[in-house]
Length: 112
Length: 113
Image (cartoon, rainbow over all chains, first blue to last red; front, top):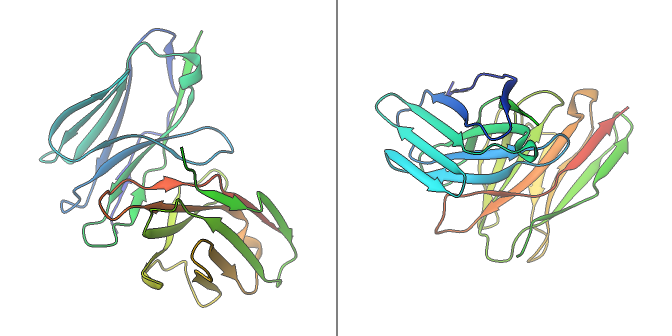
C-alpha cells in the first residue's frame, strides 16, 4: 500500500511567522509531488507542484523535495490568517495515468 | 480562467437509489479522475478515465460505480444502488496531456439516508 504521511496538526503559528509543513511518501518511483490547500467544506486547490530535488519558490510559498529521504515540505512565509486551512500533500503514481495519492493533511491555524 | 464545474452541489438520496454526479471538465483536459472524501478523512482516488475508457480504478470502485463521458463535455459518475457509506464529497479532477497537475472541481456532497 503506497502511503503519504503527514502530521495532522493543528499547527499553530502567529501571523507573520513561517509555517513549515512536512510530508513523507513510501513509493520511491513517484516523480511528481503536489501541495493542495483545502478550506473546510471546499475542494482541494493546487498551490505548488515540484518534480526535482531542491527548492521551488512561488510567492510566499516554497516547496522542498528530497527524493533520497522521500520527503516533501512546504514553507509559507509571512503567514496570514487567510492561510488557515488544511494542507494536503499529494504524490503521483508513476505511469501513464498518474492517479494521485493524498496524505491526511495538516491543519494550519494562523493566529492574528 | 476556466474551471471545472460539478452538479449538483448537494445531493440527498435514499439508500438503494441511483445517483448520477456530473462534471464539466476544462476543455483542454484529456485525463479525468473521480475522488471522494468521507467527512474527516483523506481524499481517496476512485477512478481515472482517458480516451473514453477507464484507465485505472481503486478497490472502492466496485460494480456499483460506473463512469462515462456521454458527450464531448460532461463526465459522469453513477452509483447504482447507494449505501449509507457512500455519503461523502465527490470531486472530479482533470489534467492536460502535457502536465501532471490535476485541477479539482468544487465537489458534490452526497448524503445517503
